Length: 381
Image (cartoon, rainbow, N blue to C red):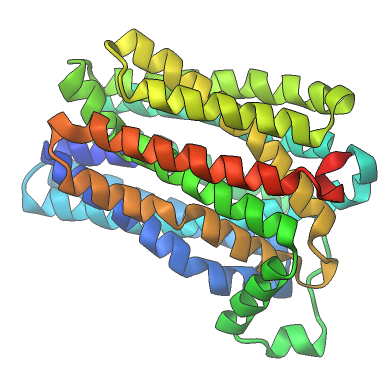
């Protein structure tokens, strides 16, 4: 709800495509800055503790934002409020995300050869929430910004309460090296680990280029739906709910396909489908075709996500799992603030052309990544 709802909120509050793109950048830049120290915190204190604290702080920030928008629904104060919300919720979302990814990687390692099924299940849970969140955010935004933010506050509070009732997913790292390591050192160590694993390096680099295309699609989506196709904010949220539904089906299908065809064949097929769908989305003639193509694109991205998660769980050593995960996620998400800047600097009538250029880069990056991955043992099983 926050990832897709906050940009919709900014567009509804400011009525500015440029500020919507800038808000997307403000949402992602602090996220990237958080990864170094967030990985160290999870390694040191455990994923459950970090997740609970991040969720509680996010609930407080959202509640404060809802109160401020109720008092000042428009004007400069409202614009400043939504921009601050974009930045702060971005940081807290990534801290909790890294905590859950670390716990999921530990479970996948324990599953051995069935790691891809574990990762598919976890991704399916995530996509189920993503399926409901954007549409619900769009509907609540039609009722009012405070109502939408209150709903996200409730979700974040419940998340922290549920997490407190679960057993610790993995013991926190308590070695002298981990406790003495500075946040920047943790991230540097993670980057060194990624560079030492060629298969992971190529896969992460290719998916980072792919994320430039999907990030631009996310940042420009509200503007394209409302201005190009003349639809409402609710319709913009519906696009991503439909995409999440398609991804959920694709994730379930890919889990069984990998059992039969292998990890690389399924990943390469998804890469081809994602590239073609993104190129077609740039020239979508109407809202319905745009919705369908975005759904196909994100479904293919979901299949590639299983490949990434599985390869990552197999290759990353257990000693500094959170720091290495933080490094891979940092690389993967680095294109998102750039996508926001591209949206802010691009006139609305040229958004489709820029998306086409991003699609070409996506195709090149994925082709190089899966060509290199084909010969790696981690992807052949």
